[in-house]
Image 1 (cartoon, rainbow, N blue to C red):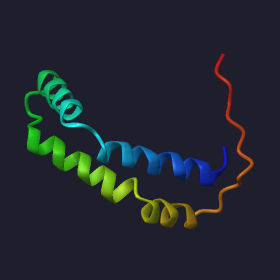
Image 2 (cartoon, one colour; image 1 turned 135 degrees about the vertical axis):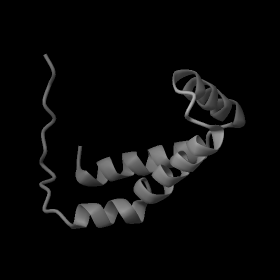
Image 3 (cartoon, rainbow, N blue to C red; image 1 turned 90 degrees about the vertical axis):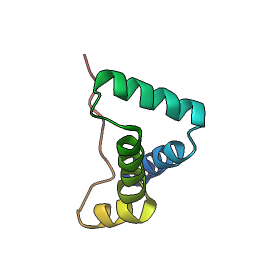
Image 4 (tube, rainbow, N blue to C red; image 1 turned 45 degrees about the vertical axis):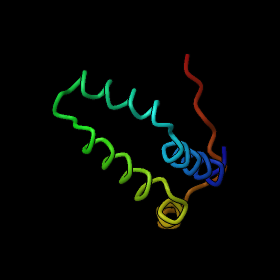
Length: 80
């Protein structure tokens, strides 16, 4: 998988987070509150928005990739 493909996958994840239905969000809020009552609906919404907007957007990802010399010929390791 090339760096461009990896970036596109992360951008796609950000779009999926943005496009969650209200039912899906309700499930996420309920699960998080069950696992840890300190997670409020507002905290979760804020965290998801920050991850989506600050880390999973194309400009942020391209800026990150541009800071490093990364070889596109990365071979994924196979798990035994």
